Each structure stands twice: as C-alpha cells, then as structure tokens.
Amino acid sequence: MQYEGDIYRPPSEARSLIIQATIGCSHNRCTFCSMYRGKKFRIRPVEDILADLREMAKFYPGARRIFLADGDALILPTKNLLAVLSHIRVLFPADTRVAVYASPRSVLLKSRDELRELHAAGLGIAYLGLESGSDEVLRRVCKGMTAKEIISAGLQVKAAGIPLSVTAISGIGGKELWREHAVCSGEAFTEMKPDYIGLLTLMLEKGTPLFAQAAAGIFHPLSPEEVALETLIMLEHMDCEGSVFRSNHASNYVSLRGTLNADRPAMIRALKDALEGKTAYKKEYLRML
Ligand code: SF4
Image 1 (cartoon, helix red, strand yellow):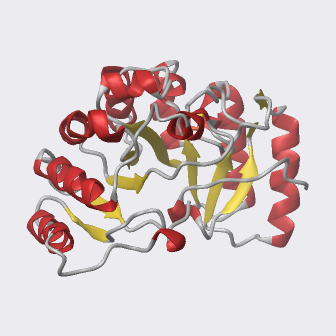
Image 2: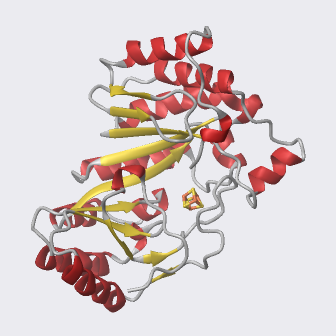
C-alpha cells in the first residue's frame, strides 16, 4: 500500500491505522487551509480501498482504531462506505472504531437513515469543521457553508447516534471580526452540543490565500492576548453540558482541557491568569499545526 501525498488526521487519531478512502478534499477552497492544496480531489475505487484493508490486516490485525482519510471520506457513496465498514468488521476486531472527517456538505447529502446505517455498520466518530459560527467569517474564508448548514450537519450526525467532534479556529476572524467570531462560535457549539469540541489557533501557512491576505495587510491576525480574550468570550457563550473541550493543541497559546460546563470556570480562570500576566503564552516558535 502506498499513501498518496501528505496524510492528515485529527490529533486524537494519532494511533489509528490510516486508510485513504478519498484523495484530497472535495471542497479544497478554505483560504486558511493548506492540507490538500496540491491534490486533485477524487474518490478512490472501492476495490482499491478494500485491497488496502486486506493488506494492512496482515500487518496490523489488532488495530483498534481506523481513520478513513483524506479530507472527506463521508462523501463516498453510502453503499461503498458500507462495503468498507463491513470489510473492517471482518478483518479487524469487532469493536474497532472507524473515524472520518465529515464535511458539512457530505453529511447533508446523506439521509438520516443512511447515517444510522453507517453508524450501525461501525462508523464510530465524525470530525466536523465548524471553523467559525459567524457567517461573515465563513464567507471570508470561503468555507462554502453557512453556520446554520454546519449546525444542521452536526445535529444530523448526532441524531444518527454517531459521536460528533467539532473544531473551530481561534483568531480566524482577525482583528475585525474576533468578537463576532467568539460569540457566534460559542452559540453554534451550544446548538450542536458536540461530544467533543476542539479549538485550534490559526496559523498562517505559506501558500494559502489567507497568508497572502495577511502579507498584503488585508487580514490582521490576533496577538496571543487577543486570542485569549476571544477564547474567554467564546467559552462564556458556550452551554454544552457534558462536552469534552480541548484547546491543548500545539497551535494554542494557552493549553485548556476540561468537561463542560463543570470545568468552564477553571478554564476561564486559566485564560484570565494569562491575560493578567500570571502565566506565559506558548512561544511562537513552539507553535505548530
Ligand atoms: S478546511 Fe476542511 S473543508 Fe476546508 S479545504 Fe481544508 S480540508 Fe477542505
């Protein structure tokens, strides 16, 4: 088996066996994202995916977690995805968790019954990118979806019984829209109440349109202090009882982790400590994606 191009997966899939079900991302237009820019999107033939699974089962028969890459495996026709999941059931232990990145569009293209069928066949978690709850921010970064559509996709996943992990990006509204981004993202999370919430912090990557906009003075990135204040306001607008909140990624200036709503005061305290200079922000050179 040979991987095609760079492979990306969510931080929590670090130990997963990764199989490419698609090459690239079906959207591939978000201005901040460099992940699949060099790849022309295509869905791999199901026979190729099954062949990879058979080959990997010889080397990793005990794999308990499988991540179906690349950017949007849920876009596969349901019958193909079911064939992949049933192969996984046969080749790997029955309780192996299968995970996918799910674009909002790919979720909304499936009926609730299809999503339920996929869950019953072993789809164990879907990672959905909200990026921001602000429609203006989403428009500027060319996400191609409104907040309402992304929220609706998240709720569809949950209604099908599939555990839902949703990510937003601190700082993505820049200096102009940071407060709107904070409030609307907190409210969007409140509507979805995902099982897991991940908050990364924007890193401008060379080769992306957003990097060029920042270099041209059109987009103004936030300072670490502004990111901390934005996160604090986002948390204040989040009512997600039971959601696991993580903002402890390598890109984050202040590391936070807790279960909402119980741990919210402690996380807000940690942000206030940073804002009052009692604790230090992660140094820029230590940050990465
Ligand atoms: S952020 Fe997600 S949807 Fe947007 S281009 Fe990157 S992989 Fe595709």
